[in-house]
Length: 404
Ligand code: UD1
Ligand code: UDP
Image (cartoon, rainbow, N blue to C red; front, side, top):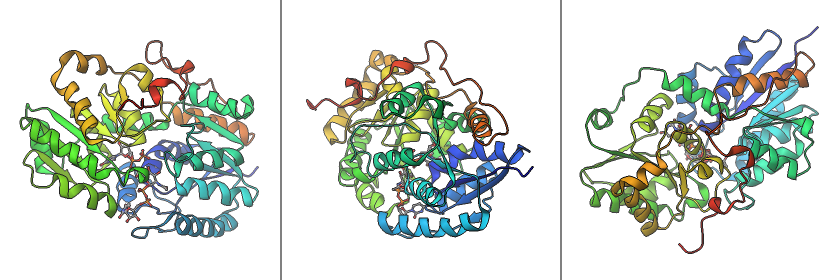
Protein backbone atom coordinates (compact mmCIF):
# COMPACT_ATOMS: atom_id res chain seq x y z
CA UNK A 1 0.00 0.00 0.00
CA UNK A 2 1.33 3.46 -0.88
CA UNK A 3 1.79 5.81 2.01
CA UNK A 4 -0.45 8.88 2.24
CA UNK A 5 1.50 11.94 1.14
CA UNK A 6 1.15 14.78 3.61
CA UNK A 7 2.25 18.19 2.38
CA UNK A 8 2.78 20.75 5.16
CA UNK A 9 2.82 24.29 3.80
CA UNK A 10 4.24 27.22 5.75
CA UNK A 11 5.83 30.56 4.95
CA UNK A 12 6.12 32.88 7.93
CA UNK A 13 7.89 32.74 11.30
CA UNK A 14 4.87 31.78 13.42
CA UNK A 15 3.73 29.10 10.98
CA UNK A 16 7.23 27.63 10.91
CA UNK A 17 7.31 27.48 14.71
CA UNK A 18 3.86 25.91 14.94
CA UNK A 19 4.36 23.33 12.16
CA UNK A 20 7.86 22.36 13.32
CA UNK A 21 6.65 19.77 15.88
CA UNK A 22 4.19 18.37 13.30
CA UNK A 23 6.75 18.14 10.49
CA UNK A 24 9.30 16.48 12.79
CA UNK A 25 6.74 13.93 13.93
CA UNK A 26 5.51 13.28 10.38
CA UNK A 27 9.08 12.80 9.15
CA UNK A 28 9.56 10.07 11.76
CA UNK A 29 6.19 8.38 11.20
CA UNK A 30 6.56 5.48 8.77
CA UNK A 31 2.87 5.50 7.89
CA UNK A 32 3.29 8.76 5.95
CA UNK A 33 5.39 10.39 3.30
CA UNK A 34 6.09 13.89 4.62
CA UNK A 35 6.55 16.79 2.19
CA UNK A 36 7.37 20.09 3.91
CA UNK A 37 6.92 23.06 1.57
CA UNK A 38 7.95 26.64 2.27
CA UNK A 39 6.45 29.53 0.31
CA UNK A 40 9.17 31.80 1.70
CA UNK A 41 6.62 34.54 2.46
CA UNK A 42 9.21 35.48 5.09
CA UNK A 43 12.94 35.14 4.47
CA UNK A 44 15.38 35.76 7.33
CA UNK A 45 12.69 35.34 10.00
CA UNK A 46 11.71 31.98 8.50
CA UNK A 47 15.25 30.72 7.98
CA UNK A 48 15.92 31.37 11.70
CA UNK A 49 13.18 28.89 12.61
CA UNK A 50 14.07 26.26 10.00
CA UNK A 51 17.66 26.30 11.24
CA UNK A 52 16.63 26.14 14.89
CA UNK A 53 14.33 23.14 14.51
CA UNK A 54 16.38 21.44 11.79
CA UNK A 55 13.55 21.51 9.23
CA UNK A 56 14.53 21.34 5.57
CA UNK A 57 11.65 22.06 3.17
CA UNK A 58 11.55 19.75 0.15
CA UNK A 59 10.31 22.67 -1.98
CA UNK A 60 10.85 26.38 -1.38
CA UNK A 61 9.20 29.12 -3.41
CA UNK A 62 11.28 32.02 -2.05
CA UNK A 63 8.38 34.43 -2.52
CA UNK A 64 9.31 37.29 -0.21
CA UNK A 65 9.58 40.76 -1.74
CA UNK A 66 10.12 43.97 0.18
CA UNK A 67 6.80 45.66 0.93
CA UNK A 68 4.76 42.86 -0.63
CA UNK A 69 1.06 43.51 -1.19
CA UNK A 70 -1.57 40.95 -0.20
CA UNK A 71 -3.00 40.28 -3.68
CA UNK A 72 0.33 39.87 -5.43
CA UNK A 73 1.64 37.69 -2.59
CA UNK A 74 -1.42 35.43 -2.60
CA UNK A 75 -1.48 35.14 -6.38
CA UNK A 76 2.23 34.25 -6.56
CA UNK A 77 1.76 31.74 -3.71
CA UNK A 78 -1.19 30.02 -5.40
CA UNK A 79 0.64 29.79 -8.73
CA UNK A 80 3.83 28.46 -7.13
CA UNK A 81 2.01 25.95 -4.93
CA UNK A 82 -0.09 24.74 -7.85
CA UNK A 83 3.03 23.52 -9.68
CA UNK A 84 4.26 21.71 -6.58
CA UNK A 85 0.85 20.11 -5.99
CA UNK A 86 0.79 18.97 -9.61
CA UNK A 87 4.25 17.43 -9.25
CA UNK A 88 3.81 15.82 -5.80
CA UNK A 89 0.12 14.90 -5.92
CA UNK A 90 -0.34 15.00 -2.12
CA UNK A 91 -3.30 13.32 -0.42
CA UNK A 92 -3.45 15.96 2.29
CA UNK A 93 -2.31 19.58 2.65
CA UNK A 94 -1.81 20.98 6.14
CA UNK A 95 -2.47 24.70 6.27
CA UNK A 96 -1.48 26.37 9.55
CA UNK A 97 -3.20 29.40 11.02
CA UNK A 98 -4.30 32.48 9.14
CA UNK A 99 -1.55 33.99 7.00
CA UNK A 100 -1.63 34.65 3.26
CA UNK A 101 0.45 31.48 2.83
CA UNK A 102 -2.09 29.43 4.79
CA UNK A 103 -5.03 30.78 2.80
CA UNK A 104 -3.24 30.29 -0.55
CA UNK A 105 -2.27 26.72 0.37
CA UNK A 106 -5.84 25.83 1.31
CA UNK A 107 -7.30 27.31 -1.86
CA UNK A 108 -4.63 25.86 -4.16
CA UNK A 109 -5.12 22.40 -2.64
CA UNK A 110 -8.91 22.63 -2.73
CA UNK A 111 -8.84 23.54 -6.43
CA UNK A 112 -6.78 20.40 -7.03
CA UNK A 113 -9.08 18.13 -5.02
CA UNK A 114 -6.61 17.64 -2.16
CA UNK A 115 -7.95 17.11 1.38
CA UNK A 116 -7.27 20.24 3.45
CA UNK A 117 -6.40 19.99 7.13
CA UNK A 118 -6.52 23.27 9.06
CA UNK A 119 -4.08 23.34 11.96
CA UNK A 120 -5.03 25.98 14.58
CA UNK A 121 -8.62 26.11 13.36
CA UNK A 122 -11.56 28.01 14.80
CA UNK A 123 -9.90 31.16 16.16
CA UNK A 124 -12.29 34.09 15.71
CA UNK A 125 -12.60 37.69 16.81
CA UNK A 126 -15.92 38.12 15.04
CA UNK A 127 -14.57 41.26 13.27
CA UNK A 128 -13.61 40.57 9.65
CA UNK A 129 -11.31 43.64 9.67
CA UNK A 130 -9.36 42.70 12.78
CA UNK A 131 -6.89 41.17 12.64
CA UNK A 132 -6.57 42.07 8.96
CA UNK A 133 -6.47 40.02 6.80
CA UNK A 134 -6.10 37.07 9.21
CA UNK A 135 -9.74 36.83 10.39
CA UNK A 136 -10.88 36.48 6.78
CA UNK A 137 -8.12 33.99 6.02
CA UNK A 138 -9.14 31.73 8.91
CA UNK A 139 -12.75 31.72 7.83
CA UNK A 140 -11.86 31.04 4.18
CA UNK A 141 -9.63 28.12 5.15
CA UNK A 142 -12.40 26.77 7.38
CA UNK A 143 -14.76 26.70 4.40
CA UNK A 144 -12.57 24.30 2.43
CA UNK A 145 -11.04 22.21 5.24
CA UNK A 146 -12.13 18.60 5.77
CA UNK A 147 -10.43 18.30 9.14
CA UNK A 148 -10.30 21.17 11.64
CA UNK A 149 -7.59 20.87 14.28
CA UNK A 150 -8.83 23.31 16.91
CA UNK A 151 -6.32 24.26 19.61
CA UNK A 152 -8.89 24.71 22.38
CA UNK A 153 -12.45 23.81 23.26
CA UNK A 154 -13.34 27.49 22.72
CA UNK A 155 -12.11 27.38 19.12
CA UNK A 156 -14.00 24.13 18.62
CA UNK A 157 -17.18 25.88 19.83
CA UNK A 158 -16.59 28.69 17.33
CA UNK A 159 -16.52 26.11 14.53
CA UNK A 160 -19.62 24.37 15.83
CA UNK A 161 -21.45 27.73 15.77
CA UNK A 162 -20.53 27.91 12.07
CA UNK A 163 -22.09 24.45 11.60
CA UNK A 164 -18.86 22.52 11.14
CA UNK A 165 -19.68 18.91 12.03
CA UNK A 166 -18.34 17.70 15.40
CA UNK A 167 -16.84 14.64 13.73
CA UNK A 168 -14.65 16.89 11.56
CA UNK A 169 -13.16 18.74 14.56
CA UNK A 170 -10.38 17.51 16.85
CA UNK A 171 -9.17 19.58 19.83
CA UNK A 172 -5.41 19.16 19.76
CA UNK A 173 -3.95 21.89 21.97
CA UNK A 174 -1.78 24.43 20.19
CA UNK A 175 1.43 23.01 18.74
CA UNK A 176 3.16 26.25 19.76
CA UNK A 177 3.29 24.81 23.28
CA UNK A 178 5.09 21.71 21.92
CA UNK A 179 7.65 24.07 20.33
CA UNK A 180 7.89 26.27 23.43
CA UNK A 181 8.53 23.33 25.76
CA UNK A 182 11.28 22.09 23.47
CA UNK A 183 12.95 25.52 23.11
CA UNK A 184 12.65 26.29 26.83
CA UNK A 185 14.61 23.11 27.60
CA UNK A 186 17.64 24.29 25.58
CA UNK A 187 20.56 26.06 27.25
CA UNK A 188 20.54 29.35 25.38
CA UNK A 189 22.67 32.49 25.58
CA UNK A 190 21.84 35.79 23.91
CA UNK A 191 24.04 36.62 20.93
CA UNK A 192 23.51 40.34 21.59
CA UNK A 193 25.82 41.39 24.47
CA UNK A 194 23.38 44.09 25.66
CA UNK A 195 20.62 41.51 25.98
CA UNK A 196 22.91 39.06 27.74
CA UNK A 197 23.92 41.79 30.20
CA UNK A 198 20.27 42.76 30.75
CA UNK A 199 19.34 39.12 31.29
CA UNK A 200 22.09 38.68 33.90
CA UNK A 201 21.42 41.94 35.73
CA UNK A 202 19.00 42.37 38.65
CA UNK A 203 17.03 44.96 36.74
CA UNK A 204 13.48 44.35 35.64
CA UNK A 205 12.89 43.80 31.93
CA UNK A 206 9.95 44.76 29.73
CA UNK A 207 9.71 42.95 26.38
CA UNK A 208 7.87 44.60 23.48
CA UNK A 209 6.91 43.25 20.03
CA UNK A 210 4.66 44.76 17.37
CA UNK A 211 3.97 44.00 13.72
CA UNK A 212 0.23 43.76 12.93
CA UNK A 213 -0.87 45.28 9.62
CA UNK A 214 -3.94 46.90 11.17
CA UNK A 215 -1.65 48.50 13.78
CA UNK A 216 0.72 50.12 11.28
CA UNK A 217 -0.98 53.51 11.61
CA UNK A 218 -0.97 53.27 15.40
CA UNK A 219 2.60 52.02 15.62
CA UNK A 220 4.03 55.49 16.24
CA UNK A 221 1.80 55.56 19.33
CA UNK A 222 3.14 52.19 20.41
CA UNK A 223 6.72 53.44 19.94
CA UNK A 224 5.81 56.61 21.86
CA UNK A 225 4.40 54.56 24.72
CA UNK A 226 7.64 52.56 24.98
CA UNK A 227 9.62 55.82 25.02
CA UNK A 228 7.39 57.30 27.79
CA UNK A 229 7.79 54.14 29.87
CA UNK A 230 11.55 53.97 29.37
CA UNK A 231 11.84 57.61 30.50
CA UNK A 232 9.55 57.05 33.48
CA UNK A 233 11.49 53.94 34.60
CA UNK A 234 15.21 54.49 33.89
CA UNK A 235 15.96 51.60 36.26
CA UNK A 236 14.09 49.11 34.03
CA UNK A 237 15.43 47.68 30.75
CA UNK A 238 13.21 47.48 27.68
CA UNK A 239 13.91 44.92 24.95
CA UNK A 240 12.45 45.51 21.51
CA UNK A 241 13.23 42.77 18.95
CA UNK A 242 11.92 44.55 15.86
CA UNK A 243 10.07 42.82 13.03
CA UNK A 244 11.84 43.25 9.68
CA UNK A 245 8.88 44.96 7.98
CA UNK A 246 10.31 48.38 6.97
CA UNK A 247 6.95 50.01 7.77
CA UNK A 248 7.22 48.78 11.37
CA UNK A 249 10.76 50.10 11.63
CA UNK A 250 9.91 53.49 10.12
CA UNK A 251 7.08 53.96 12.62
CA UNK A 252 8.75 52.70 15.78
CA UNK A 253 12.47 53.46 15.49
CA UNK A 254 12.38 57.29 15.56
CA UNK A 255 10.45 57.11 18.85
CA UNK A 256 12.70 54.70 20.69
CA UNK A 257 16.21 55.24 19.38
CA UNK A 258 18.89 56.77 21.63
CA UNK A 259 17.31 55.88 24.97
CA UNK A 260 19.96 54.11 27.07
CA UNK A 261 17.58 51.58 28.61
CA UNK A 262 15.90 50.45 25.35
CA UNK A 263 17.68 47.54 23.65
CA UNK A 264 16.65 47.35 20.00
CA UNK A 265 17.53 44.17 18.12
CA UNK A 266 16.66 42.34 14.95
CA UNK A 267 14.17 39.47 15.33
CA UNK A 268 15.64 36.93 17.73
CA UNK A 269 16.02 33.23 17.01
CA UNK A 270 13.17 31.37 18.69
CA UNK A 271 15.26 29.88 21.50
CA UNK A 272 16.61 33.33 22.44
CA UNK A 273 13.16 34.89 22.25
CA UNK A 274 11.82 32.13 24.50
CA UNK A 275 14.55 32.93 27.04
CA UNK A 276 13.73 36.61 26.74
CA UNK A 277 10.05 35.95 27.50
CA UNK A 278 11.12 33.80 30.42
CA UNK A 279 13.32 36.61 31.78
CA UNK A 280 10.67 39.33 31.23
CA UNK A 281 8.79 41.07 34.02
CA UNK A 282 5.93 41.96 31.70
CA UNK A 283 5.34 41.74 27.93
CA UNK A 284 3.67 44.28 25.61
CA UNK A 285 2.70 42.79 22.27
CA UNK A 286 0.28 42.57 19.37
CA UNK A 287 1.52 39.06 18.47
CA UNK A 288 -0.73 36.02 18.42
CA UNK A 289 1.93 33.47 19.34
CA UNK A 290 3.26 35.53 22.23
CA UNK A 291 -0.26 35.67 23.71
CA UNK A 292 -0.13 31.87 23.84
CA UNK A 293 3.43 31.42 25.06
CA UNK A 294 3.77 34.11 27.74
CA UNK A 295 0.89 32.84 29.92
CA UNK A 296 2.52 29.40 29.95
CA UNK A 297 5.63 31.11 31.32
CA UNK A 298 3.61 33.03 33.93
CA UNK A 299 4.23 36.44 32.36
CA UNK A 300 1.62 39.22 32.40
CA UNK A 301 0.83 40.33 28.85
CA UNK A 302 -0.66 43.64 27.72
CA UNK A 303 -2.08 43.10 24.24
CA UNK A 304 -1.93 46.23 22.10
CA UNK A 305 -5.01 45.41 20.02
CA UNK A 306 -8.74 46.11 20.14
CA UNK A 307 -9.76 42.46 20.36
CA UNK A 308 -8.33 38.97 20.51
CA UNK A 309 -9.14 35.57 19.07
CA UNK A 310 -7.33 34.02 22.06
CA UNK A 311 -9.75 34.62 24.94
CA UNK A 312 -8.59 31.83 27.20
CA UNK A 313 -5.68 33.67 28.86
CA UNK A 314 -7.77 36.86 29.13
CA UNK A 315 -10.38 34.87 31.02
CA UNK A 316 -7.64 33.29 33.16
CA UNK A 317 -6.40 36.82 34.00
CA UNK A 318 -2.85 36.68 32.57
CA UNK A 319 -3.57 38.70 29.43
CA UNK A 320 -5.25 42.12 29.23
CA UNK A 321 -6.36 44.01 26.14
CA UNK A 322 -5.16 47.61 26.25
CA UNK A 323 -5.62 48.89 22.67
CA UNK A 324 -3.10 51.11 20.89
CA UNK A 325 -3.58 54.51 22.51
CA UNK A 326 -0.24 55.84 23.81
CA UNK A 327 -1.51 57.13 27.18
CA UNK A 328 -3.54 54.02 27.87
CA UNK A 329 -0.66 51.63 27.12
CA UNK A 330 1.52 53.70 29.45
CA UNK A 331 -1.13 53.75 32.19
CA UNK A 332 -1.72 49.99 32.08
CA UNK A 333 2.01 49.21 32.04
CA UNK A 334 2.65 51.63 34.92
CA UNK A 335 -0.01 49.87 36.95
CA UNK A 336 1.81 46.55 36.58
CA UNK A 337 5.26 48.05 37.13
CA UNK A 338 4.32 50.10 40.19
CA UNK A 339 1.56 48.14 41.94
CA UNK A 340 2.66 44.77 43.30
CA UNK A 341 -0.91 43.57 43.87
CA UNK A 342 -1.89 44.37 40.26
CA UNK A 343 1.23 42.57 39.04
CA UNK A 344 0.68 39.52 41.25
CA UNK A 345 -2.91 39.24 40.09
CA UNK A 346 -1.71 38.76 36.49
CA UNK A 347 1.54 36.83 37.03
CA UNK A 348 0.04 33.33 37.05
CA UNK A 349 1.36 30.47 34.99
CA UNK A 350 -1.65 29.17 33.09
CA UNK A 351 -1.59 26.84 30.17
CA UNK A 352 -4.95 26.90 28.43
CA UNK A 353 -3.38 26.52 25.01
CA UNK A 354 -1.65 23.17 25.13
CA UNK A 355 0.20 20.42 26.96
CA UNK A 356 3.01 19.69 24.50
CA UNK A 357 1.11 16.89 22.75
CA UNK A 358 -0.57 18.98 20.06
CA UNK A 359 1.44 17.46 17.21
CA UNK A 360 0.74 13.92 18.44
CA UNK A 361 -3.02 14.56 18.43
CA UNK A 362 -2.85 16.30 15.04
CA UNK A 363 -1.06 13.37 13.47
CA UNK A 364 -3.43 10.82 14.97
CA UNK A 365 -6.35 12.78 13.49
CA UNK A 366 -4.64 12.89 10.07
CA UNK A 367 -4.00 9.15 10.33
CA UNK A 368 -7.73 8.64 10.80
CA UNK A 369 -8.54 10.95 7.87
CA UNK A 370 -6.21 8.96 5.61
CA UNK A 371 -7.27 5.53 6.89
CA UNK A 372 -4.00 4.52 8.54
CA UNK A 373 -4.85 5.01 12.21
CA UNK A 374 -7.26 6.46 14.74
CA UNK A 375 -7.57 9.78 16.48
CA UNK A 376 -6.72 10.01 20.19
CA UNK A 377 -8.50 11.83 23.00
CA UNK A 378 -8.98 15.58 22.69
CA UNK A 379 -6.86 18.07 24.59
CA UNK A 380 -8.43 19.13 27.86
CA UNK A 381 -6.58 21.77 29.90
CA UNK A 382 -5.72 20.70 33.43
CA UNK A 383 -8.23 21.85 36.03
CA UNK A 384 -7.39 25.39 37.13
CA UNK A 385 -5.25 26.13 34.09
CA UNK A 386 -8.06 28.08 32.44
CA UNK A 387 -11.79 28.41 32.26
CA UNK A 388 -11.15 27.32 28.68
CA UNK A 389 -14.00 25.07 27.65
CA UNK A 390 -16.62 27.71 28.33
CA UNK A 391 -14.47 30.61 27.16
CA UNK A 392 -16.06 32.60 24.37
CA UNK A 393 -14.19 35.13 22.32
CA UNK A 394 -17.21 37.38 22.41
CA UNK A 395 -16.92 37.65 26.19
CA UNK A 396 -16.75 41.25 27.39
CA UNK A 397 -13.20 40.83 28.63
CA UNK A 398 -12.06 40.11 25.09
CA UNK A 399 -13.38 43.33 23.61
CA UNK A 400 -11.72 46.40 24.95
CA UNK A 401 -14.30 48.66 26.46
CA UNK A 402 -14.88 51.90 24.59
CA UNK A 403 -14.37 53.90 27.79
CA UNK A 404 -10.68 53.92 26.90
C1 UD1 B 1 2.77 38.08 8.22
C2 UD1 B 1 1.34 37.56 8.32
C3 UD1 B 1 0.80 37.75 9.72
C4 UD1 B 1 1.74 37.17 10.77
C5 UD1 B 1 3.14 37.71 10.55
C6 UD1 B 1 4.10 37.04 11.49
C7 UD1 B 1 -0.04 37.81 6.33
C8 UD1 B 1 -0.94 38.67 5.55
N1 UD1 B 1 0.49 38.33 7.43
O1 UD1 B 1 2.72 39.47 8.43
O2 UD1 B 1 -0.47 37.11 9.82
O3 UD1 B 1 1.27 37.56 12.02
O4 UD1 B 1 3.56 37.44 9.20
O5 UD1 B 1 5.28 37.77 11.64
O6 UD1 B 1 0.18 36.68 5.95
N2 UD1 B 1 10.25 41.05 5.93
C9 UD1 B 1 11.60 40.86 5.74
N3 UD1 B 1 12.16 39.66 6.13
C10 UD1 B 1 11.44 38.67 6.70
C11 UD1 B 1 10.08 38.88 6.92
C12 UD1 B 1 9.49 40.06 6.51
O7 UD1 B 1 12.30 41.73 5.24
O8 UD1 B 1 12.02 37.62 7.02
C13 UD1 B 1 9.62 42.32 5.50
C14 UD1 B 1 9.45 42.41 3.96
O9 UD1 B 1 9.63 43.73 3.55
C15 UD1 B 1 7.98 42.02 3.78
C16 UD1 B 1 7.38 42.69 5.01
O10 UD1 B 1 8.33 42.45 6.06
O11 UD1 B 1 7.43 42.49 2.56
C17 UD1 B 1 6.02 42.18 5.44
O12 UD1 B 1 6.00 40.74 5.46
P1 UD1 B 1 4.58 39.99 5.26
O13 UD1 B 1 4.79 38.53 5.39
O14 UD1 B 1 3.89 40.48 4.03
O15 UD1 B 1 3.70 40.53 6.46
P2 UD1 B 1 3.90 40.43 8.02
O16 UD1 B 1 3.53 41.74 8.59
O17 UD1 B 1 5.22 39.84 8.34
N1 UDP C 1 9.33 35.30 18.06
C1 UDP C 1 10.67 34.98 17.80
N2 UDP C 1 11.59 36.01 17.77
C2 UDP C 1 11.24 37.30 17.99
C3 UDP C 1 9.87 37.60 18.25
C4 UDP C 1 8.95 36.57 18.26
O1 UDP C 1 11.02 33.82 17.60
O2 UDP C 1 12.12 38.18 17.96
C5 UDP C 1 8.35 34.19 18.06
C6 UDP C 1 7.40 34.15 19.24
O3 UDP C 1 7.97 33.40 20.30
C7 UDP C 1 6.16 33.50 18.67
C8 UDP C 1 6.20 33.91 17.20
O4 UDP C 1 7.50 34.42 16.95
O5 UDP C 1 6.23 32.08 18.69
C9 UDP C 1 5.18 34.94 16.93
O6 UDP C 1 5.38 35.48 15.68
P1 UDP C 1 4.75 36.86 15.25
O7 UDP C 1 4.51 37.71 16.46
O8 UDP C 1 5.63 37.40 14.19
O9 UDP C 1 3.40 36.41 14.56
P2 UDP C 1 1.92 36.08 15.10
O10 UDP C 1 2.03 35.04 16.15
O11 UDP C 1 1.34 37.37 15.59
O12 UDP C 1 1.22 35.63 13.87
